[in-house]
Image (cartoon, rainbow, N blue to C red; front, side, top):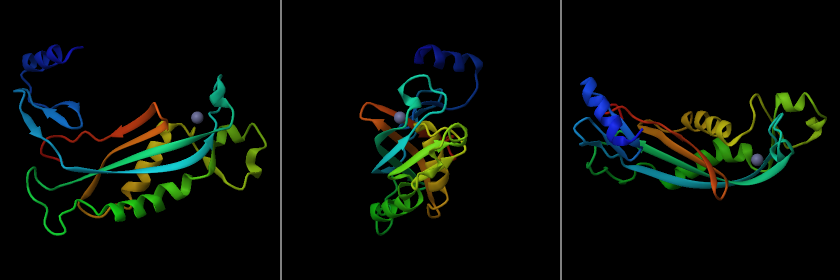
Amino acid sequence: MSLFIFCSFIRWKNTQFTVVIDRHLILNTKYQYLSIMLQATKIFHFEMAHAIHDHKGACGNIHGHSYELHVTVTSTVPEDAYITSPGMLIDFKDLKSMVNRAVIEKLDHKIALSRAYLDKGPATSFKNLLQMEVEPSAENLLIYAKKSIEQILPEGINLLALRLFETKDSYAEWVRYPIAGEI
Ligand SMILES: [Zn+2]
């Protein structure tokens, strides 16, 4: 459905709710900007092996990826307001050490396999085995990272988006779409 048709439908319904085009551009029914949020992103790298249980193709074999994880945070600072000293949403150094501890150290150089996969084979002797209840796909790794990072972020800082590159041209993304006025 095109954006024009989608917006027309909303006007016909005469309902005031937010149309999210992407996480940078949020429109209301009058096509005005409601909010453009200040956000900060830190990029992380890790190496991990995995296999997808019952996958019919090559993903069913244990193989490795050089992952790239983009962690984007935002805050409750109002639009266009300067941030008081030290003038940062979050110190990149602090974000780096928090995410390293919560996610990267847990995944880097591990073999991630689901319980379903392990029930089939003798892979449990791996010392660096990370056993997961779900398949260790990029999408599920994002949910794992999201839950881990949200536990360690300081007050007033919210996780806005995660982007995980499995290869240089394939990524999965987790994005929170805020409701206007509730950022
Ligand atoms: Zn893979």
